[in-house]
Image (tube, rainbow, N blue to C red; front, side, top):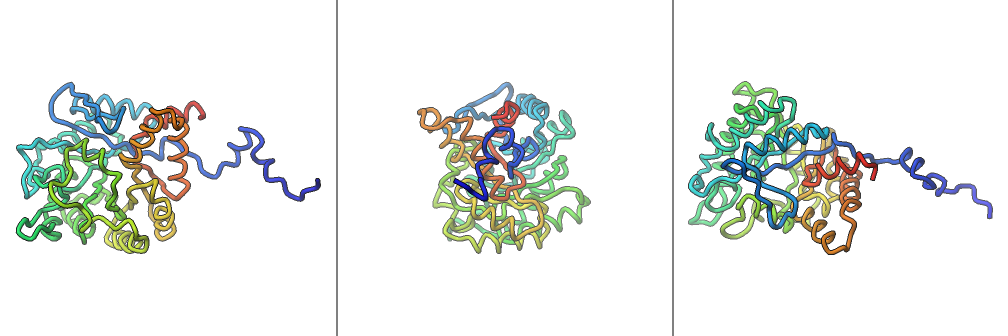
Length: 329
């Protein structure tokens, strides 16, 4: 049979497949989320995230050093606040001696070149587990008061030495407020990675286990986005870019590959995606039952996220992925 074009020629060996691959993962693609706890010599596995841990600050330094040696250049910090510092103002979030602030300083001292990003939201510090200040009489999250609190939080992270703040709260107008505050206070080299299209997703459950930050009432649908919508994601993202975001994020990733592509097509700044805890847990659970090959599922999933348009991927699989890539999986 004569064929003018035989497409399989470019698939016939590993060598040619590698040469013509359109999407290639490298350690430079990954942001590593890290969970930090008070205390010393603490390494607590998160039950709903097998193989992932919450570390005390002394051990998180060792973890960051290992990540740097692997070629990973960026970490995203989350802290587990003690119950006694939680309230409805979030004031612990901008405590200069708080766990987040101490963690930023310690990591930058230990590995100065590591890019440190910090979560900006009130849920770890809230007695209600919400991302903002709550008006309990009305049962609503107060937007403008929350932005004021988060601005103080952002400035405290910048003062501690954060390279990027990463607001995950989804309050209206917060990116403009943060950029203005950073500029006015001399933190002109601190970047903003905005969770611009963060959906109200069921895939966040294990993360909330990790930080004990599940909402104490209701849900987060009045500020996180409706997963039925895609145009809304573009509107949110473009507003964040206009207000001064340096990087925009889509969260979650795997169930929102179409949104990642839409956002990538709409902006000219880097796009990140968060491969969230529930997506991690599903792969782990299926692999534990022998239903999928875990290593292959990791690389295929991350490649799909990058192929969709993500320039950066926050993922709990980052360390595993780098090791697998070095083995040419």
